Amino acid sequence: MQQQALAAMVAWMRLDTALKAFEAALKRDHKITTLQLAVLHIVSERPHIPLAALRKALLAHPATLGQAIDDLRRKGLCQVRTNPEDRRARNVSLSQAGAALVAAVPMAGPMRLRDVEGETDRLDRLTPALNDALELFGLENWMGR
Image 1 (cartoon, rainbow, N blue to C red):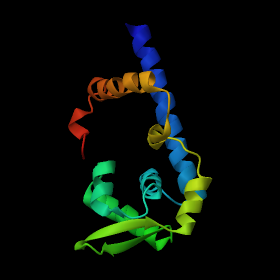
Image 2 (image 1 turned 180 degrees about the horizontal axis):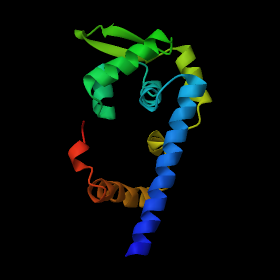
Image 3 (image 1 turned 30 degrees about the vertical axis):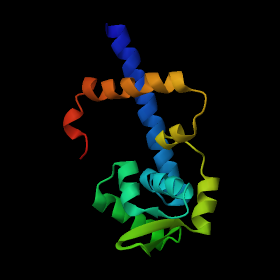
Image 4 (image 1 turned 135 degrees about the vertical axis):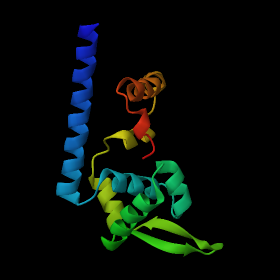
C-alpha cells in the first residue's frame, strides 16, 4: 500500500505544482487569475451571458465572482450591462481585448476539459478519481467555501 500511496502523492504534487505555475504565469504575463480566465472563456462562447449563468457555471461565490468581473471590466477585458429584458439582471460580454487575451493564453487547467473531444473514457475515469481525492485528502469540509 505504501508504494501506491507514494505514487498517488507524487502525481498529486506534480498536478498541484503545474497548476500553481500556470496561475503564476497568468498573473505575471496577463495580470489575471485562473477564475478570471475561466470567466473570459465562458463569456467568449456567448455574446451576452447573464451574470447568474456565470455563477452557476463556475460554482463561484457571488462576491468572489463579482470582484473578478469588476477587475476584468476595469482592465477592459469585458463589459457588464443591464439586461434589457430584466433590468435587475446584468449581462457580461467580451471586449476585443478580452477576445485577444483568450486567443493568446494557452488552454490549460480545468477549463481545458470543456474542449476535450474523443476522450470520454478518460473523462469518465477522471471525475470519480477527483471526487475520491477530496475524500482521501480529507478536504470535504472545505468544499464550497
